[in-house]
Amino acid sequence: MPYELVVKAEFGAAHNLRRYKGRCERLHGHNWKLDVCLTGRRLDRDGLLLDFVQAKAIIKKVLDQYDHYYLNDRPPFDKLNPTSENIARVIAELVQKALPRRVRVSRVTAWESDRCGATYTP
Image 1 (cartoon, helix red, strand yellow):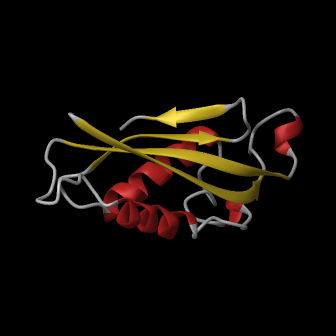
Image 2 (image 1 turned 90 degrees about the vertical axis):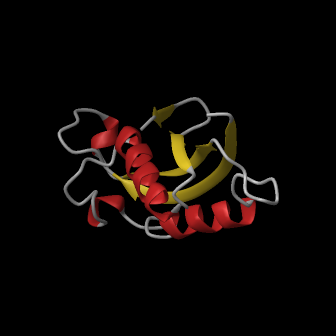
């Protein structure tokens, strides 16, 4: 795809990993930082793939479902293990549903710390 936007976002939430043996099986929290990358072939008549204001609003609406919650109680993480990998995928899928048809999510990276993150590429 010739055009790609990158929107940085963040949310804070607590979780614990199911079926995990180690410190992360206990309740803990993160301030996740996200890189949400959007791609497309065509610009609109104003020369934009998608207005950043619109992109940020879509992403914020998705993240508001998880910000300052215990993820293990929030669908789909009430059944799906709330790993960084799954968080990146779920956010990518929810953002994609809200985008105009000509814009696609190309990848989402969920950073659980400054040095550790997981990327989902649809």
